[in-house]
Amino acid sequence: MKFCLHFGNAAYPDPEDAKRLALAAEAAGFESVIAVEHVVIPTHYTSRYPYSESGRMAGGIDAPRPDPLAWLTFVGALTSRLRLITGVLVLPQRNPLVLAKHLATIDHLTGGRLELGIGIGWLREEFQALGIPWARRGSRTDEYVHAMRALWDRDDTSFEGEFVSFEGVSCNPKPAQGSVPIVVGGNSEPAIRRAARLADGYFPATGDTSFDVAGAVQALRKETHAAGRDPDAIEVMAGCPDCLPGSGKDPLKAVADRAAAGVARVVLPVNAFEADLEGMLAEFGAKVIAPSNV
Image 1 (cartoon, rainbow, N blue to C red):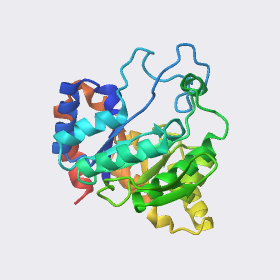
Image 2: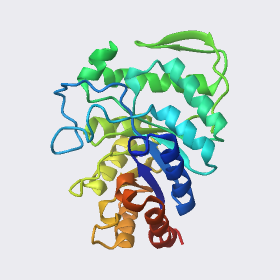
Image 3: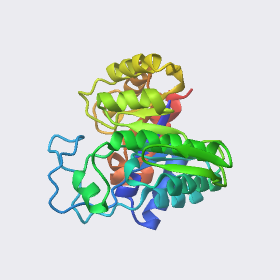
Image 4: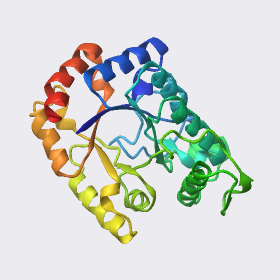
């Protein structure tokens, strides 16, 4: 089982704290870290945040949320094994050619450790502030994935789409992995269908204990079959609240249950370890990560 820490850039936005997190996570045996994204937070937003009962994001409008790609690049320079994941980057807000270049460069510089977690966005007011259409953002997202993969795949490439077109261009360096893995985030049916069609990975992006992870995995496998793809080619990552410190549950059983449900990477909120970051991560590594990977 792989283990990942979520909300890294939101919880540890400053350079010294980010360094502490990165080094402690890698030393404890964590395989990856996730950085979240919002370019701006409108003061009086009414859009409902889909991952909390309150419908509001944690933290106020003044909470630091460093750009995920810049933060992950910083963390990548400090580490040698930790994989670097956006969770999620709001893809339809980005220029796909500029983003393809940025991602390929990071992957090149970090030795092939980047993964692009994407979502279509839930915060309408942020789209309005950026001057980007809210309508058909799902279709825009799908097309941007195809366009970026075309740029990573070959030189002198062309692409003709509804939202982006280019002819005879090259984008270098190419990703060290050949292509940057795409992880689709979201616990909705459209997100599952998008992952089935396009993704290398799927992240329901919820730590809610009531969320049916096994059901989501089965739905993903069904949709992947329908799309003519191999379900085993999509890696599933999911939260595991019952393995967190203080849960009162058996963490090894919780991890085993996730594995049995088809989860390959357990995602844990980093704030669960903030009382004693280095000590709690090291203890979790010794008592949970190491035994789970014997």
